[in-house]
Image (cartoon, rainbow, N blue to C red; front, top):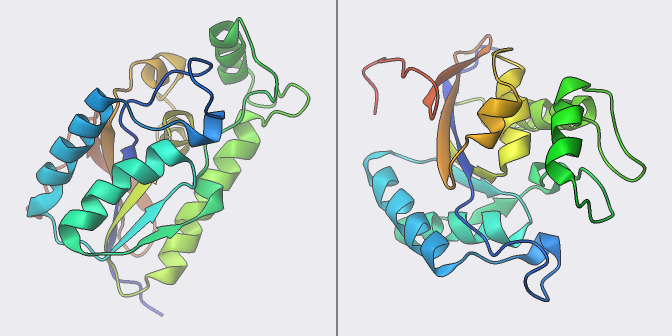
Amino acid sequence: MTLAPLDVLLVRHAEPVAPYTTDHADDDRPLTDAGRAAAAELAAELDGYELTALYSSPYARAAETIAVVAKRRGLPVQTLDDLRERRLSVERLDDWRVSLEAAWTDAELAVPGGESGRDAQRRAIGILDLLRARHPDGGRLVVGCHGNLISLMLQAFDPAVDFAFHMGMPMPALYRLTHDGLRWRIMGGHGFTPVDDGDA
């Protein structure tokens, strides 16, 4: 079976309220006012793209970001649990940045209850495989996700993606992957040189 080309537009959510600053659990943190405005701007930027389907992490910050695109397009959002953010720890980490950098240095490192970088990356690539299988006729998907998981996904195709890349990723951010029927390629996004293939 020949697979038609498939574009995946990976969207890191817009700015959410900071952890531990409200009564919201981490999974349920909504966007800030600035985040909602940025999500609206991103949705407007996507108006030039023909879209096939929308997918999102179940976490509120990702779902709220993609909901703006869904409303503009009149498309449903399909939630995939495996698009959730990588959980570094089930406990609050006062030195979370140090712990995260250590986890980038050692992909097998996982604190009790947390997920290693290697396991999260496998989960992320599994999502791409699922999307490829669901859309054999190709198209263009918007996928609402999270910074750490997106960084690990990109690293699978470009080993230069590292802790510094991840920490420099804006909110929101957009990355374009294309499957040409044989393999995935990074076509552009924050920190990457866009590949001009003549197709908006």
